[in-house]
Length: 210
Image 1 (spheres, rainbow, N blue to C red):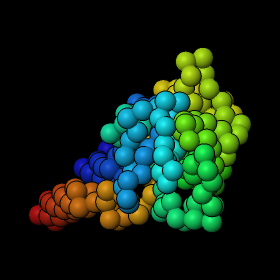
Image 2 (cartoon, rainbow, N blue to C red):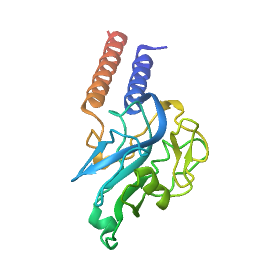
Image 3 (cartoon, helix red, strand yellow):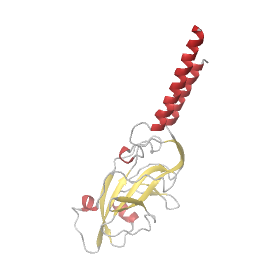
Image 4 (spheres, one colour):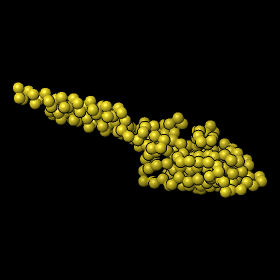
């Protein structure tokens, strides 16, 4: 292989490696969230023990994540007024606004397509848990033998918190950690390889004509 071909090969490898970062080992599961004002917070209790109050907003997001710090929040705007504003209060009952985000195709199990994100206003007894509120609005639910929530509204059809590896593409540009364009590091590295390639070609031509 000539020096020019080698450098061009290195450039191609740099572009591919930087443009498609590998997603570390994680788990595919439904995460549970509380909404305070305009911010989602990873719930400190599971839905089977959390008891929301009238006016609370809670979210569920299906995704691949390494842990709670890495977990994807439910997408889109969410407010109690927008979800439950048309539902009147009732004695002995409470209204819980639910945001159910089935995630993206990159997080879906093989052969399955995530349904569209949806919101529901669950009207339940005052002492109902988040899991009971969810059950009134998004059946069928599926749990495993350890009471882990595996499926909402039948999605996904199979699997429950399984470990996965591979590459994950971030489909949420509105909350992306980058500006949506190529990173500065990518272009700086590519420019360096191109400059080396140009220098090698110039030197080779100079030797031939010397």
